[in-house]
Image (tube, rainbow, N blue to C red; front, top):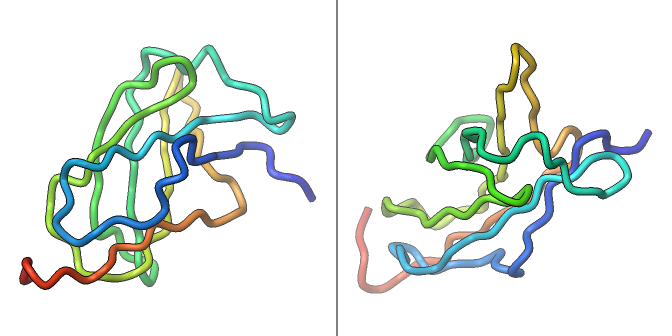
Length: 114
């Protein structure tokens, strides 16, 4: 069964250093045909970073051109996190990706302690 909602990382950032608040993760929201979903533009999305089924970080941002940008503003433990995006529009809740997990790896830093 194919994904009905798809999420891609536009700028190929899949690893960042622990405590790196400058790197911007650019995500694109796509439909089952891998086309942009324009009617979600200007709506608010919540990006979740999940580890072992527990939300470890969340950030709200506006969707523009079927994309959103986030900077991790907190120091997270060096782990692999599943990226998930939720958008609510007109009583419908969209969850990206719908059935494939995308990961962001936070690499340990010698400078930061959690």
